[in-house]
Image (tube, rainbow, N blue to C red; front, side):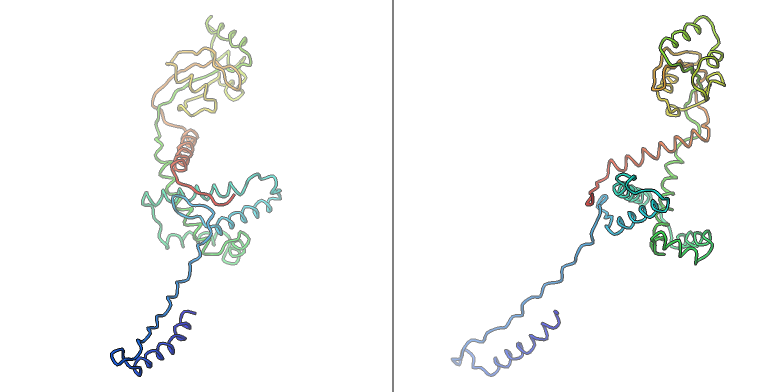
Length: 303
């Protein structure tokens, strides 16, 4: 349209120039020529791409969010579940995209990069694991991916795993731990009886076998093994154990499970068990992600 308007103006400009040549100048008493000025043509307005959210200024595009919602819905349907039972799944999908964006930003800040060759190698492996290109193409279609979209997902997944590995690997193998045991009973009266028996010289392990309600530890005399400060699901027991010196026994320790008597046997630097280290690594990752989210500038534009 702009070029058409310019072409339409050319005869007007030419006519104006010709008239100026044939018209007497003001010095000869003729009229002053009129200048013809082309009206400026505005640049076309660029329509912004709709966004679902921004994370530290980086957009999450509405189309990407809608694709993830569609994948979630398809996944639920494939499992035979009712979407009405999934709660506010759209918000969960958006939260997952926000967390993913934050983690990728952290990976970039840490200098973690990935080449196209590495991404293609992962892509080829995925194709092979699906049994070949035809089967893989069918899987892509069923999961609402194009090949390029899946490559992007692979890249994001590898970068996410790399930066999270750095956080998890920072958890040391040897940490301050205690070796403790406990007896769990249902009432305060039973607790007082156990404490009285211990005070009279009864064996802790024997009382645990006879009276403890904790089926997982009673067979071992109430032994909980070695654990770090956050290594037990019952925080009150862990706190009590770490408040004691080796050989000391607690008073009444109440938790949601009932009433405990805790005895610390040993304490000091000790290697983490694989399960305990995995637990601490997950705690470290959860805390790291929560910190990223707390410090982020997030705007959401979809409900």
